[in-house]
Length: 144
Image (cartoon, rainbow, N blue to C red):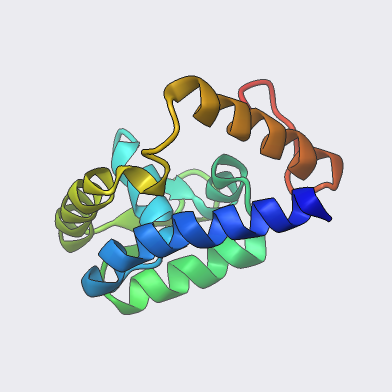
């Protein structure tokens, strides 16, 4: 119980710090993550299935996130040029501008984990990744 309670309280602390700076921008952390991912791609787009793999979230969650970002004019759905069955999520100019402002905001609060040094942060990432993989939250890949 101590481990579960500690994880839940830490999640509340981190999410509270990050949400406090993203909320005024009209974003949640999940939407921010999706915008960052798209902004880092060569052409600003990815197949939605690939987004789920890279964000380590369920495909249904990706659809929900992209729906919200699309409604806000931050991304658009476009047909995949080589696979008619696939849809790409593509960041818009407005999305790029917002992700830049949002990144400055979350960096200012150090993503809510600024009280931990780099090694402590890495330890948390590794432990939580192990838990998530073992319960099937996402498929382990060589780069995850």
